[in-house]
Image (tube, rainbow, N blue to C red; front, side):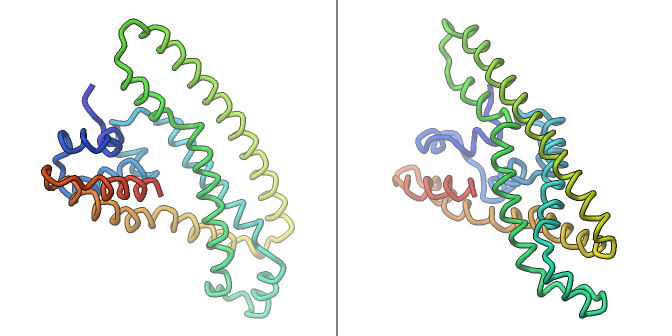
Length: 230
């Protein structure tokens, strides 16, 4: 019944004043362990998510990024590559990479709502009424079963579309495959790299808000909780 990283990071302000004694570095590491998809899979065994589903989500995320980069691989970019005699130039491909990165992030956020079970289990833990325990357990199992079923059906459809489109694209544009792979690796790598920087911000507000129990700094604490959801 002890708090895991996600529970500790999302405590109400008064509870955080009582229980959260972590330093800035400890809080930052907890955000990386709960937000960075690779670290969540291999280095966080304290969450309430299935490791198999997290791994599946990672591969679907890569497939979506790969397909989106192919979708944004316009005729203009192909012509530019031809004019440059096959030399890969990152500058004129930055918009395509950014579009793919943003849309992938949005689509992955939606898939996470279906794939991850932690928020539902934390909500179940918070309700400590013994009388309705069996009913709540039954409801939780049914809810998660429905979520996982929808996730796997939707994931299968997404992967089928990705496979079909990428197969057609690579068959028609054989000479652009290497450029597509480079764009995909940059775009997907960006999604793996940016959390290390963006999650430096929440601790700047959270740690001072909890440092002095005599001063109410709930606004700073609320701001840090908003930033950690980005």
